[in-house]
Amino acid sequence: MACDFLKDLAEAREYSSEHSAAFLLDSDPLGFNLKSSERSECIAGALQCGREVAQTFLDANGELSPYALAAKLKIKVIEAALTPARTVISVFDPALHTVTLNSIIFEMIDTVMSRYGTGELFGRFTPQEVAICHEFFHYAESLDDNLFSKQCKTVLWRVGAFAYESTIPAVSEIGAMACAKSLCQLVVSPLLLDMLVWEGMDSGQARRWFDKLKRSHP
Ligand SMILES: [Zn+2]
Image 1 (cartoon, rainbow, N blue to C red):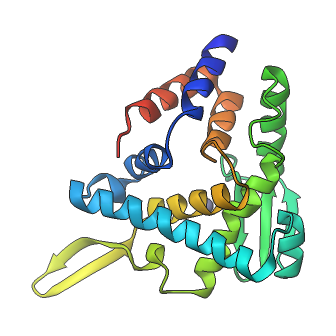
Image 2: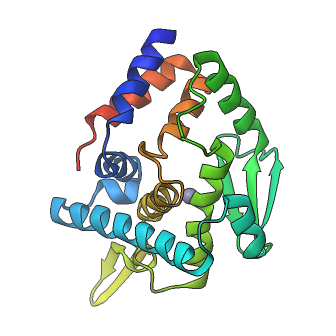
């Protein structure tokens, strides 16, 4: 199984941001039903939004380490077991101004990275730092309702002239991924973090997730 994982990882390293974004949209029931023109618009808008948010952080703070930037923004970073949300990598809580890194997941990521010798996957950044940069986007969303990810909506149902709309969670995740990629100057997609988690949980399931990722096209 070892070589299967490394083979998948090598292939995924080459995937564009658009490719990873398409996978996230396909995995979201609200994104899956979009028309193809809306789909491309969502992907392009979310990627641009994530990059712009990252640039705003850089312009205002210079190139700080993710932990230093969190401290400057008065965001507390803690590492704790997120149960029952065992598969969640990290989460930003706007009320508590806290980023929680799921210790269960990071132990798993650590094990997979040392088992396969992929320590350099995110350049000079640790998986925790990539996750913190992802959460900076959700922090920005908590402050600005005009961001693309807050404005990009799909109609859930209509009654006469009334339409009930909802934001699309995947659009927000695509933005967060683009923000982390820019802040950490990654050459790979931050979605590789998820691949490490899949592998840590269940190799067989990881292959199925990867097949789905492989088939996603923007
Ligand atoms: Zn997120």
